[in-house]
Image 1 (cartoon, rainbow, N blue to C red):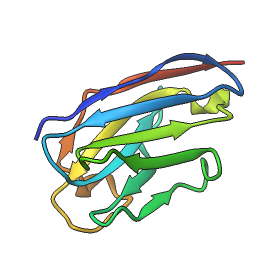
Image 2: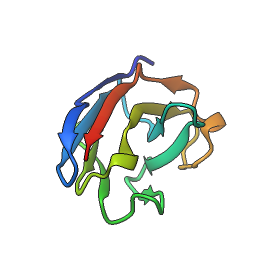
Image 3: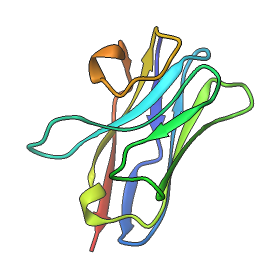
Length: 118
């Protein structure tokens, strides 16, 4: 599995970004993020049947979805805050259900930097 993440960048607080993650086929996918000096934290996941779950810290501001092929997953982020600044990683799991546990994801993209300026 090779995951290719893209879409990060510099945005002003209150702005929006859409991250993309292309995989070779359909997987249970998730986005995590890691800010400097902090542990990697769960952001959102989409399962085999396209059911989604979003972390409370971003609920109402973040949506995870797939394209029509099912192979590309998007993370749409809006009303961005400075605390959203982090490297965002997409991840794929061999499981058929979503989890928020980083250890359940065995393939990771290279990470894409999101910087929110206040």
